[in-house]
Image 1: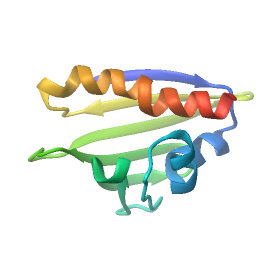
Image 2 (image 1 turned 60 degrees about the horizontal axis):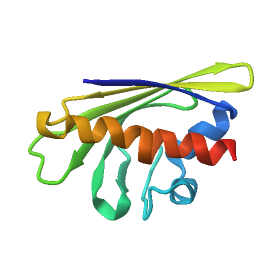
Image 3 (image 1 turned 120 degrees about the vertical axis):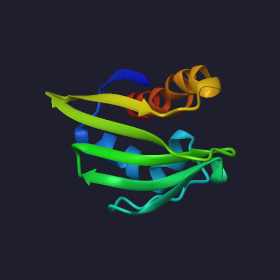
Image 4 (image 1 turned 180 degrees about the horizontal axis):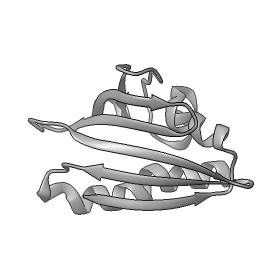
Length: 124
């Protein structure tokens, strides 16, 4: 299981937008992106390298997604929990059921290409 915490110098609305708005997602680097921010809404990132659906959506609070990549037979589960702390937003990431041989790659990928990229984009 992967657990990471990010402190992002941006409002909770801005962080939520970066997690759920396909145009913003493309701006920070996840494109081509398709995203629907409703429960059961399907998504696709990096032109289909990662895909899945939202299984729990609480706007500005929590987003839980089923993720598939490559030839995975079963999904992994990603949870983004957002906490407002003044002008900062804390994002607590949990990524479960990642194939063992890909866990290190995903651990690095979150900081290099996803939440790290969102933090860099929003703090520019």
